Amino acid sequence: MPRTDTARTKTAAPIRLRWWTELPLILLVYACYSAGRLLVRGDESTAVEHGLAILRFEKDFWLNAEHPLNRLFTREPWIGIPADFWYASLHYLVTPAVLIWLFRSRAVRYRAARTWLMTSTFIGLIGFTLLPTCPPRLLHPGHGFVDTMAQYSSYGWWGGQASAPRGLGGMTNQYAAMPSLHVGWSLWCGVMLWRYGGTRTTKVLGVAYPLITTIVVMGTANHYLLDAVAGAAVMGIGLLLAPYVMRSADRAKLWLRVRITARVGPGSTGSQGAQTSIVSGGCQTAPRERIPRQRESVLGPGAGPGPGPEPGAAAADAGDGAAAAAR
Image 1 (cartoon, helix red, strand yellow):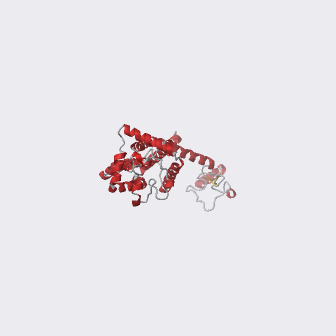
Image 2 (image 1 turned 60 degrees about the horizontal axis):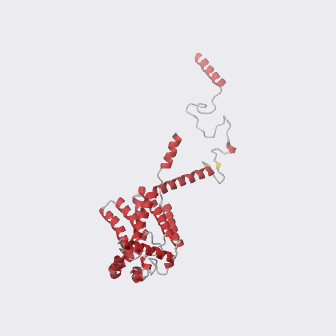
Image 3 (image 1 turned 90 degrees about the vertical axis):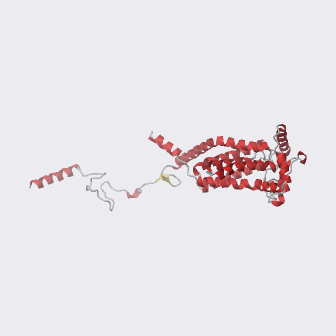
């Protein structure tokens, strides 16, 4: 029983996270996400069909808010230009900033929040693979959409291919529109600000940031309304799966630690796992031999552990003491 309790305590002990392990992990996940987007580029005709199907569905149910917003952003540069900057930059700035803030001030909640974000991101990558979708800005002009990123490209660093810098449009997958992770990541940031901000300002920002992002992605013709809804749904699924992902990661770490310990051996050094010895083989002492500078016990020689005085010697000492007392 004590061993079981100890094992449970060791397993349940909180993991202390370090920035030099967290940063490579986050960069690795984002690199896998970016590479995955490029590898799952769908066929253009299939992506256009999916985009038109979404647009027809929204029109049938009076959900196509993209058209009025896009016309507003196109007609009013004072709205369209800031919206393009918002779309092209904030998800690169706000999401890492919230992660760093959680790591520094809410370390207890950081691991769960980070796992939620990463799990949802990979689910979104599955959506890009199964449902490549042409965004509204890439549809035929007859459908009534204007690419505001291209219209106002002279004001920013982006070109006519999404928010990628000029000349790097080939490094992005323009048909990765379903779901909208711009909306998903902004929703994650909003939840973190609302739950852990602690002030009225952070709560207002927690509501405003995902709401404005949703309006921006539709007004710039980068996403449909259903893309935004799918982005929120992906975050919901990721939130449900995050505890299972963390438990699986803990079991994997424990299994790996046990395998390494079993292979190397406890208290071993060197590649062969030979156990260390306190006294080398050539320096063994005889049973009655004292180690140099060894302290004697307060009770005298033979009082401590180890070989004591012989029985005969003890009796002789006792007899001499009795004779001396008699004299």
